Amino acid sequence: MLVCELTTYRSLPSAEKREEHISYLRCVGARGKLALSGRFADAKGALIIWRVNSLTEAEELARGDPYYQAGLIDYQLREWNLSIKFPENLE
Image 1 (spheres, rainbow, N blue to C red):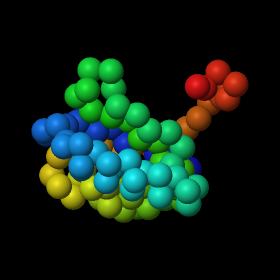
Image 2 (cartoon, rainbow, N blue to C red):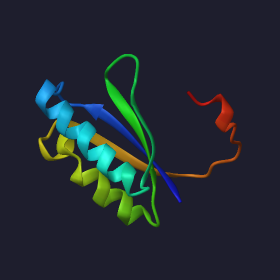
Image 3 (cartoon, rainbow, N blue to C red):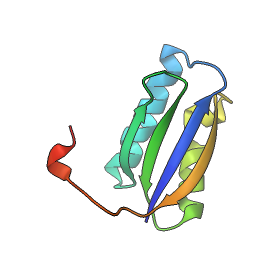
């Protein structure tokens, strides 16, 4: 199951908090639970695509993010059905 997390920043994170966030995502990714992640070009939020077994698992991962724990973001989770995939086009 894929779940999209749409985040919006309440306030911009410090460099230290960003390092914690990236480290967290890398650890989750190493466990096979993260498909994609990135900040929007306008720096007002980000998109994370979780590879999970349930919406509850995605909720637990989102709440474990140092950004969320520090009160820096709000987020919304939505289950996503992948229809078309062109992996050779992903950079």
